[in-house]
Amino acid sequence: GNSVTQMEGPVTLSEEAFLTINCTYTATGYPSLFWYVQYPGEGLQLLLKATKADDKGSNKGFEATYRKETTSFHLEKGSVQVSDSAVYFCALKNTGTASKLTFGTGTRLQVTL
Amino acid sequence: NAGVTQTPKFQVLKTGQSMTLQCAQDMNHEYMSWYRQDPGMGLRLIHYSVGAGITDQGEVPNGYNVSRSTTEDFPLRLLSAAPSQTSVYFCASRIQQNTEAFFGQGTRLTVV
Image (cartoon, rainbow over all chains, first blue to last red; front, side, top):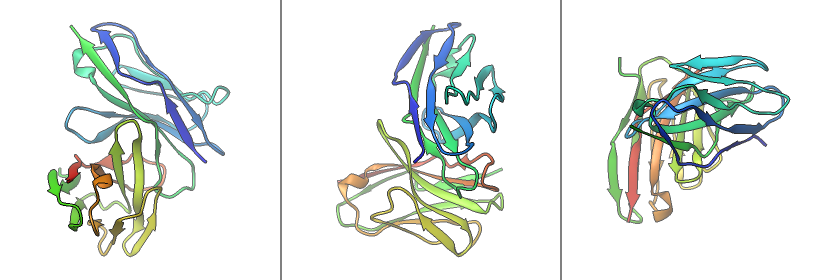
């Protein structure tokens, strides 16, 4: 079956530091890949996505590239801000599988001044 | 601009009590889902629906029922609450299989 593995947190960084959160996946076929972000006290919201190999999703300074050869979708940001403190979830969805997103366990990011 | 609305935001139940978590969306989305979020386990799918009158089980359906009488509403029923159902519950909706899912703000449920 499908599975998503994320690096364990929490990740603590100083403001303006470089961020990488690793995500690898196992899936049949050609899944779509997503990063969701959950700010404190809120629901999840889509941060970025990629639907095929070598696609790069980007939003709010975050980027992730769909690497089929390494089955990875690592999240990166060049310079984090305190406002980026949140929990980040990597997720995948197979084509044709109705309404089922498979999530990783989430990685908590804490950015300090 | 309501999106996905969940009620209540917080609830405390005694073991054995029943209750319904409400979820409504105003985006005319066909697909709706319920997830539970537990520490170290990410989000796990409880039940989902691909349209009014159609529901199916997810990964962890035991102890929960759903129905989908309208496109807008997708309530989740706990039949006899157990401490193992203490969790944060999220409802989500989307228009097609591979597009963005929109999540509600969650319901934090504690069963004592």
